[in-house]
Image 1 (cartoon, rainbow, N blue to C red):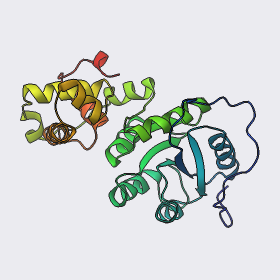
Image 2 (cartoon, rainbow, N blue to C red; image 1 turned 90 degrees about the vertical axis):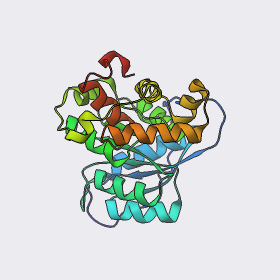
Image 3 (cartoon, one colour; image 1 turned 45 degrees about the vertical axis):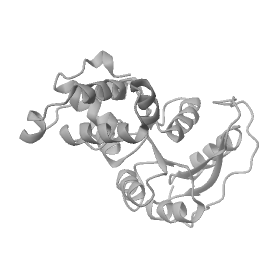
Length: 242
């Protein structure tokens, strides 16, 4: 696995027995698969091309090649493995999000450590899935990521919430305003900025400002990480995290 030249073309075999994850019409989401297991990548490509809302635009077997193909192919979402031959997919996610902030990343890995989930969310990933899960979960998560929301299976999220975390004194003493608490609770429900803004009756631009303020006060880098930290501090109940 991972040896020899990498094929950047998607598999062309017909998909038979994988139902559409989202049958409603809409724009086709362009997906780049970054995984050094060629067989798995080919199967994912076939599954993606069998969906009404998804298509595979290419495959990379290394993190470096994945970053290059993002420039070349302009995908909407990248399906990223963690264990890659050159450097890990979470580092690649951080680099990708810094250079292409509009491109979403969904991590697909065999590893399930809570610390890894936290790193992925801090790097800007929009989802974290395990390779032993259902294919439809992967396909659905790609649609969810493209919409701006985040997907993490409940058992992984609970592990992240339970994991110990060091807190800086400044972050521990930071107080949220009433509006910031409202935004935080909506984050815990899994809403994106547009949905939060609609719920609060404010503009998306104003809502982004509140989200940024919450992240800064909790010393976090993503909405999911903010929910995890807030839950550990008692600002949210675990049942608030959708």
